Image (tube, rainbow, N blue to C red; front, side, top):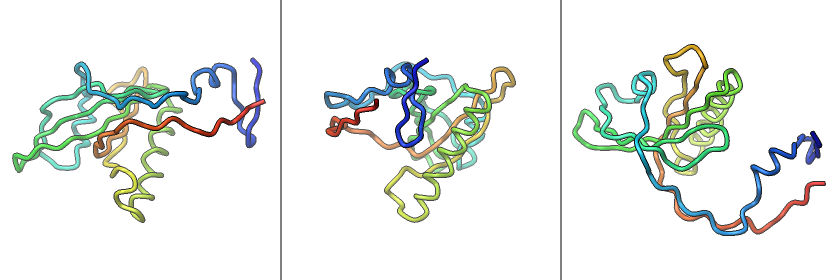
Length: 153
């Protein structure tokens, strides 16, 4: 496996193929198909008594699955949550914890700059170990193409 380094980070050929810089604008994600929620995700909802209206696959992630959850709050209002699920054992655990703690710290200083992080935890299963991240949902519009190309050699 050939490796290149950029800022002392090893980059394999496989990773380079996956993480190509887009040449065209990235289309916004759209909800599609149902997504089965684990009971620990539902337990992690920030307001007790919140019920699930719908859970839909949403967008994509290099390392896991993502979903949009539409919930009904005890007040009768609806709200949307974003869910990311990573099934990489301990690696997934550290990814979810890090992705929870970093934006959470940013949110405390600049609310609105990043989505509010609600919870992270483990699925109610042992093998394989699966972890999740729950955040407020934000609609993502079309993303501009990245105009600077890095040459990794």
